[in-house]
Amino acid sequence: RYQACLVAGMNPVWVLNEEEKKKFLDNRKKKKKPKAEVFKKPTPPPVLGPGNCISDDEMLELNNYVKTSGYFDISKVKDMEPGLIRELIRLVAFQQPLSRSGQIELRKVLETRVRRFARKLEDFRMLKDQDQEKLLNQNIPLLMEMQICTFFKPDLVWRNQFMPLIGPEEVDRLECKLKELKVKGLDNVHVFYNSMFPNPPEHLESQFADLLRDIGCWPTDAAEYV
Image (cartoon, rainbow, N blue to C red; front, side):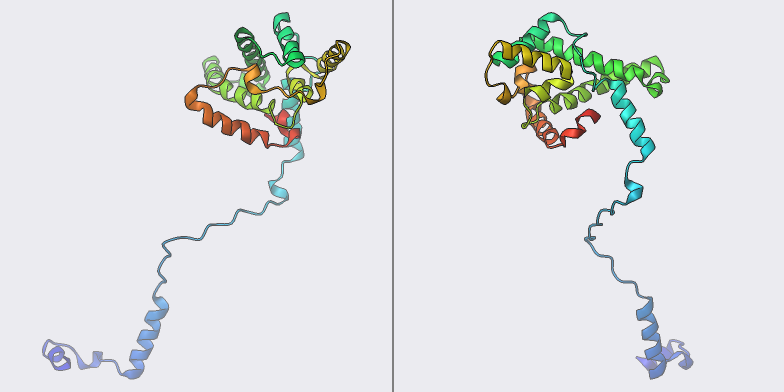
């Protein structure tokens, strides 16, 4: 092969001796890049430090939103019709589900509250009217379902379930009235979703059940932020 190369025009000077061969091979190994792995190792999640926590200013802003929403108002029955309030009383006292009209009316009350809250936000008011309506129409149904799901945590009794709905003052008043009527077992009454609202469409039942279960695992003190 060496003679054939010479005939082809190779210069004998180009032939490396043993020492030059070793040096050449060593340099080639150093330059050769390792093959990339087909499966990359998962990147571990970043460790949360002080910089990842909510700041005092952000917490102040968040608490202001909660206050504006009226979540902690002691009484919230001014926007409810007397008929709906009577149905809520029968629900606790006799576990009688709301009527179809009562379910619809309760949803309207919650929707009106969410819309009222949104229109109080300065950033929201800066948007054009058509953009406001688009956001409200597309987002309120989802926000309402999330809020409604917080009412039905498995470990809550009716008092805690009704406080975000009618306010703690009205809950205390209702409880006193029911005790005067000698209604028993109030400490164990838990109101279920289908007693207050219509079941979701069949094709969404499993998704809604997942949502209800997931939100049911949230800390109780986080409900006001929904």
